[in-house]
Image 1 (cartoon, protein in one colour):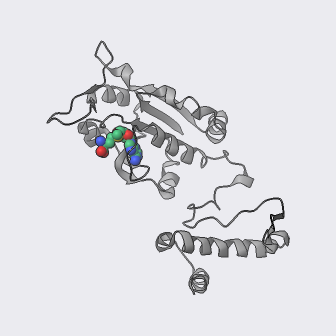
Image 2: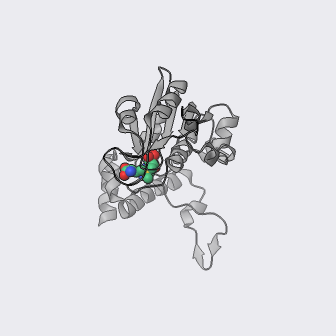
Image 3: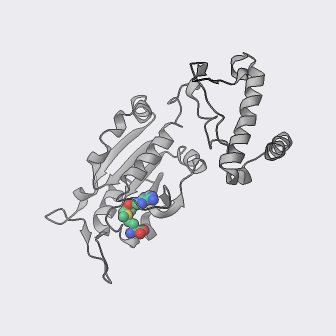
Length: 239
Ligand code: SAM
């Protein structure tokens, strides 16, 4: 996957490429990330990229010219242009799974009061939000998306770290995890995890996944494909 991040603050991302998972994805060559400074496309001698909003009101708006220039520099026929925005569709695992299969993604990070709407209307394929709150800029949302996609790229996680059991991947939350010591301040690890019976452990984990999802995020169960056995287990859990 090729990723181009359009930002006013490329230095914000300096640590990202060295972090374990994103770093590993870059190192193995499955991910290629470039950070493009939108200011480099300003035609203003002071490299200005913002201006007052027409109609008045507080703050500044990013002007369309430099953003258009940056998009034009990186865009190809295969590109998906994503604007990180609090007005976008709220990011979830399903969207991450789909996006992780794209060949070229351009992430556009806004700042100030946001960007001139003509860019959104004419050049952006998707607006994506990382939640219903407002951040100062699109850089942290871009990092969230990059991290979430990088771990799904082929060969990035070893099979022992596989993502398929992780929360949200198949619509459920993950089962509870335990590690050493077997007993911690009088609290023991569930016996079944020490039994060595792989089938029983698998069944227990699936049951726990259903139980935890029904307890913590019952809303997720509505969009989850459950078989008859799952439905039977759930009605037992709910009782
Ligand atoms: N005035 C805008 C509004 O009310 O919709 C908010 C602008 S925000 C202060 C500046 C930039 O931060 C946005 O252009 C966007 O790129 C980014 N941003 C803020 N919150 C975000 C969120 N929840 N998800 C994704 N990006 C966000």
